[in-house]
Structures are given as C-alpha cells and as structure tokens.
Length: 635
Image 1: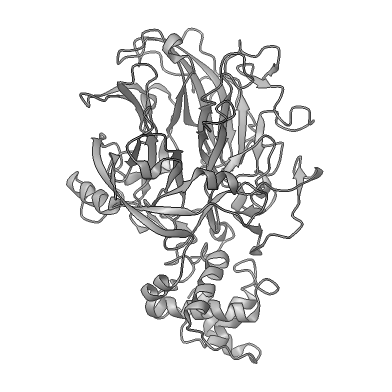
Image 2: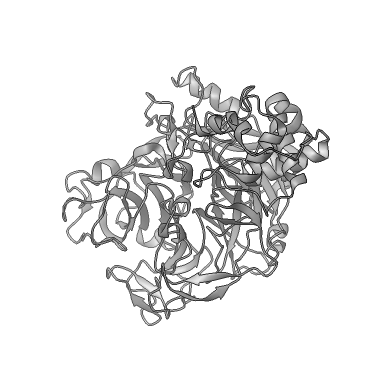
C-alpha cells in the first residue's frame, strides 16, 4: 500500500479534526481551486498521477528522494473513503520527509477548501470542471489547416512505446543560404540531410552516428545530432557549425572521428579538445555526457556530398542526461565590424540539476557553472582578436564585453543565467530598429509554467528560485513573488557577490489542460501568406501539439519589470493530433497510438518543433509520425 493510501486510511488515528470542510461547487470556487492546484499540486499529481514518471522515465525530485508514484486523482477511489476534513488536513499539513510540502502560511483555509472541492470534482466530472475554468489563453481562437510537405525516413525504435519510438526525430530545418532551393534537415539519430525543395529528394550529407565513435542519441530525449547553423558568410566560405552529443570518453583518443566514413573529409588538422568543466573524477559516466561543436568547411558547396575539413571548437561536460546543450545561433543582422559579427549564442539547459536536492540544485544560478545559461563565444579564432581573449581550450574566443569577464571565478562565456532549459533561441528584428534585434528564449519549466524570456546581457531569470510569476523553493512548493524581489548572486556553492532583481518572463502557459508539458520553439512570423499572423510570434508545446501566437508588440510591452505582466496568447486550432495518429498508423506505427506520454498530453506525444523558411513561412515537424507539414490556410 502506498504512503498516500496508508496515510489517508489512518487519518482517524490523528488528532480530532475540528474544522469542517464544506465542498464548494460554484464555478468561481472551482476556478480558484483549479488555479491553486495547478500551481501547488499538479507537478507531482498531474492530470493522471504522472508527476514522478514523465514519458515513462523517472526524473522528478519525488523519485530522487525515494518517493513513489502519487495517486491518480481522477479515479473513483483515490480518497479511500476519506472525508473532506481529512483530505483538508493532508493538503494543509503535507506529508513528512519531503514527500509533500505543507501549505500552511501560503494558502488560507478558504483557499485550501477550494482545492479540496476541485479535487472532488476531478473524480466526478473532470470535463465539466475544465470547461468552467478559464485558462491562460485568449478565447479568440482561429483554425489553421496544415498541408503535408515531406515524409521523413523512419529512424525511430518502433519496438517501444516510449519517446524513442517516434518514427523520425527531425527537429531543425534551415534554408541553405544562397539560392534557397534546398533545406538542410537533421535527425537526432545521426543524419544531417539535404532536402531538394523541387524534387523532394533527400540525401544524407553527413551521418554523425557512423562518423563519431562516442556519438549517442540514446534514451529518446534531447540527445544525438542536436543542431547546426550556417556561418554568416557560408555562401563564400562553405563554413557551418554542428552540435552533437557524445558519451564520456574512457580513452583519450576514442572520441576522434573515423577517417574512413566520409571520403571527402580531411581530418589531418582535427584535434580533440579537453572537455570544459569536467571534474577530475566522474562518479557515474552512465548519466554524464559531452556536447561538441564542430566547425566544418565544405570546399564544394552546392552538391550533396561533403568535401573539406573539420575542426573541434567546443566540448562541454554536462552532469546529467536531461536538458543538455541544445542551441547555437548567430545574430542575423550583424555585419563585419559590428561587435556581434560572427559571435555565437549558445543555449544550455540545467542538466536536470534544478530538481535535485543539495548543492547541485543551484547550478543555473551559479556563475562558476555552465548549466542553465545562455553563453556567448566567437568560434573563429581570427575574429575580434583585439577585443576578445582566447578560451581555455584554445579553440575559440571570448568577447571582452561579456558581462562577467572581469568577475574572478565566473565563467567568462556567460551572457545570461538562471534558466532551466533555454533549448531554443530566436531573433526578432524590429523594422524600426533593424540593427538591434531582440533575442528570445523558449524555456522549459519544472513545476507550473512554460515560458518565453527576452534575453539580455547579464540578466538573471531566477530559476530554480523563480518560475513564471511565482517563487519556488526546495520542499516548499510555489508561492507569490515578494514585493521587493531580490535574489543573491551566487559565484559558487558558497560565495555570493551581492543581490539582483530577477528578469521576468514575457509569455507563459500552465501545466494544465489547455496548456502543455514543454514549450517547443517558435518564430516571429515574417511571411506574406497569413495576414492574421503578421506582427506575431508563433510557438508550440512539444507533447500536446498546441500552437499559439502572441502579438510581438505585446511581448515587448510585457518586458516591464512586473512579474504579473504577460502577453496574451491565442491558440491556432489544428487537427494535428488526428493527422499524426492517422499517419503514424499508416506508416507502420501500430494501432496503439503515438508513442511516449506527458502529464498533460497523456498517452501519445506529438513531439513537435516549428521551422521557418527564408520567405518567413512556417512548418511543423512532428517526430511522432515523422512528418513535416506546412502552415496552410487560416480561418
């Protein structure tokens, strides 16, 4: 019997409960109960008890503290006959040993009564309650038709219903600079493809799985051939950069790329670099990884094979499987002579540290770590030589105008920090200020909110002390942000250097029905096909496949220093789930539905990412069924 069942069954042995709780049933009380539940309870219990096991893999702090799966709060026996007063007592006082925090001092008795009423209603009429409660989105929904564009080769493990069972793991699709007749497209399992737009012919340009001996795309999450970006002068020099994941090397030379895989690849000058931030001893290499940036120079751009050289630029040790280093991008408007010319921004997750107890929890806040950060480096050694310094590994440069270069003990590459997982970055170019673009991060949350943040030099976004418009603390859940909000600047686990007011996010949506589990990427729409989307930023949720948009002027206005100010988001209604499930079955995925699951998505992850072509038009990549679809008509 679980600790929850035992506790509820034994409540009659507790001190007499003097408070009589009357279940509330008005729409207003249920709405408040749901809102409080979403903030304080849903991360662990979820819509169907998925807090401790998301997508079939234990990752939450519950499991790490020896906890067990919380009960399903939507079934008919979850309370085991307990009275409202007994449930009230458990919710208010919590469960000891860090299993469930107390709400004393954070919620009033009346608020807890409304939570209890909402819990009762979950089991009796989930549909009615959900429809009675407004969510974080605007009600002015419009419908988006999606057009099939391309069917990716099946590379997933179809023997499993977990995340690795998706049909294909494409996530990044970019126009090749120049004549714009080809897309470059990755698959996390290893291939970097070239897709001819006219013939829809797909060729494998490089395959990282066969080229790099330590390459890993295991576990089905953010792993493998993660990202790529073209040098601003790719059309002239054929240079581009890739990001991939490797297992930690057991031998000094084992990570070197193989010489007999790509016939046109010259590896004569290729040198392995020392992993940055790797401890002297790695306690458990099963969960540690290295993230590698490679600079490629193709001497014959335009064909479908690689002929040229490669150079290792950056190799980062990360202490966990989750939320690794995902993003590399250049300022799209910087020109030769500008401070940002050929300067690369890197989005690095917290490696799951923010949900662990103990010192590792604060890695995203610490200036002596790389986790939970946006970094800024110069990958080319011959750029900005008078205004930068050579890196630790000697293979890239660090701009002198980075905010922490003069702070002893801080990582000089840091541009911004305090983020859980800024796994995608995108740029907004204001037509009225084209030389000063805005960098936005799509940041995956832990407890309550998925968010978008405007990234600024030196800014601290609060995680794991802040999430969305709430404060969070280990063992004590979520609470309102204090009126005079400051947090310490952590140089290390033990040293602080003053305080800072966090920079608050500008878009949020909840871990709740109508919201989602994990924010995907997005783009400011610059195309001409959809007038309704002009002047908006469009983004999605990975697991549920929800797609929203917000007016970019509202996003910029929300950057006002007030944690309660957010841009309104409006959903683009689609039939993406139905399309994906049908295609999944047609392509041999079986009749059991899409693989994987999420706390909000339930069984079956769509696993979406968005892409944008050189004309500014948008696409949806769905890993579940291995499809790419283009935004069609909007009604």
